[in-house]
Length: 438
Image 1 (cartoon, one colour):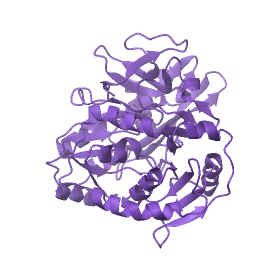
Image 2 (image 1 turned 120 degrees about the vertical axis):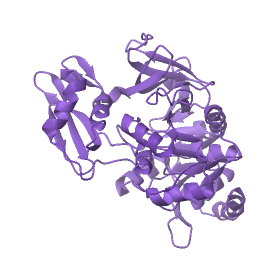
Image 3 (image 1 turned 180 degrees about the vertical axis):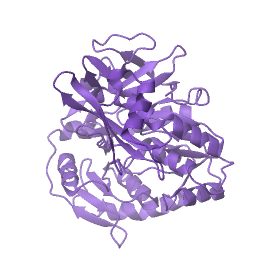
């Protein structure tokens, strides 16, 4: 594959450098292309030609796409979906207000989040930080030339600590044309894939496959993008005989946490920090919390992002003494293993008590009739906020809202139990498999 990428990249380099607007400074180039070899070719050509890659996810609406193009001040967009194979779309040229500061960073990527909550700021990552990031992450992944990594995720959202990491460390990436479990597992067995990197949603689909495909060569199954649940862990281990290794990927940081050492006995843990990173859990006053108490996850280490694009803020302006506040809520056990509890922005305040929607979702997801769920908060005149839930039932399963609420009451404190539960046909998800927050 590397020889194929190099051959195609040479032709794409010459074509890219001839495109109108691609000249001077560090031109920002949007890439709109489905996941595959062509995406990799175009992305590496942009970087090799001295440009800055700005992925444009295909699920964006026209308005969201236009806003991304404007905010990034793109010189052009590569349309990899054109029947001819590649098409350059010039964008109206305008100077970015912080152009000189931006160029001084030697930028490689501008990554916008998948938009589950809030408004994406655009994360700027330099070539140096990109290299630091893939080296630090591989201390836990251990990817090498003998590995064949089965690709499951959208490249517009996952490229740096994945495709770039695999190429950097000499591994082979196995691409699958289908997202159906059967063809994916057939490819995995035929290619001798050793690693799979996907979201809980993808792992659940693979584990639910009823075909006879085995996976004897699988050595590492990494789960990221959303918290793991017990049913997914159990079904995957039963189907393939390997534990799922949960990791915490953060756009601003990379992959600082990977549960490589406790996947068998504490599969829902994020594990301990990788060697290059320091981690602290802090309360609202910025002070460390006790073992077993929730706190915001702060991280310090290599590969940190260089700046937010809009509004422009450098790393030093965001961090406190080099520490980055992630916005994630976590707890540590006595063994130093971290467990993700939710997001600061998603925490519900019910009559003065904190409720993490993710905790309630984990309980609902453990019911055998539940295929997916989302918990959110609604205003209440007395309690301030109360939790409500939306639930998707598994195929051919039957359960009433009353039964599911009774299931929650067996495990959860009264203030955490949803006051209302609605059965729905589907939940909106991001391209990475995350459930979109309301």
